[in-house]
Amino acid sequence: MNDEPKNTDQVRLGRTILAGVLLLLVTQTCWLHSGSWKDARIDKNREQEIRKICDFVIQHTRNRRYHPPMARHPESVYYRATVAATLSLAGKLLTEERYIKAASTMLDQVLEERLESMWPVSMWADFPIFDRPFPLDWEEQESRPHPRTTGLVLYSLGLHHQISGENRFVEPARQGIEQLFATWDFNRDKERMLHFTAEAAALAISGWEHALPQFSQMKEPIVDWVLETYVETAPKDYAYFAALRMQLILAATGTKHLRTVIRPGWDAFLAEPRWRYWHNPNDFRHTNDAEINIRGNGAVAYALRLYDLAAAEKVYVDSPLYQHLSTWMDSMRRPDGGCHSFQSIANGKPYALGTLAQTLQLWWLLGGFLY
Image (cartoon, rainbow, N blue to C red; front, top):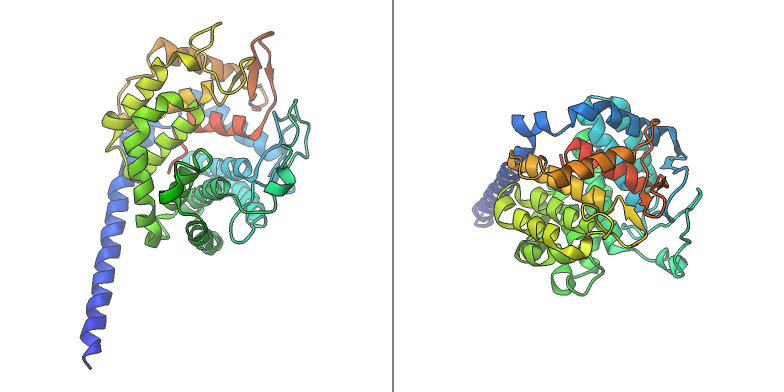
């Protein structure tokens, strides 16, 4: 008898907390669906280019995997999950259902590659490789779950679920997030882990908060750490990871920290000479001084456009720097929609058609890998 009111109170309290969490999520993400953002995010001048890229990926998909005609190096399951979720996003924004269906098929393959409810790096290269073989320890990598890969795959699955509503992805995601945080202590070890590992775990939760809000609080210490360190670390970071950390901030907190954290971080990155090339200071380094990689130029173009869209301002996109990057991105697309991964500085020619090249072009043109 005495337990009934207590249990009822607990249920009411639980419902109140859950409602508060859901309200917070709506508040944080409504900017993505506001009229100005929704109308502006697709680059209307390049809408046909978006469709060409998506069609190129689908045309080169075999056995539920995108097969690059030529890749820069062996590719991981993270790349394949990300390009699939990006296809799904394009399908939603362009009202093209076949892109969403293609993404579902590709992500079904991704689900089959789980290991202990998570994912190994899952390197593969059933396609020509430009010049970089498998890493020496790749077989050992395949024998164990990989936390960064798992987090990034889960985020892609979550974004696709937001669009498609296909519930077969929910339980694997719940198991994956639960196992990910049971296996590693991201709050304690975040600064000792492989770069962007803790952030990937937080992204996983952000991608699934619409369906799995019970995990929401677990990402907060990581997000707080990113907010505290972003301005300091952005100029030291690769452009690609600085852009992904920015994406996490937007996914987790909305536009609250745009002007106080994200913009100072990117201004510091742009002012850092180590990322600029001697031959043209408007081009950005990645890891190879002999090439301009899309993870340099493309990541910067993506981040600058994403900032202006989120801020509903033109801080960066009217600048000569952005115009150069925009022209460069256009030059890396082929007439058939395929996107090149890098450009040789020696001869000026573009090479490779790796998965991430298709993905970054789409992120840039779709106004973000967020929904």
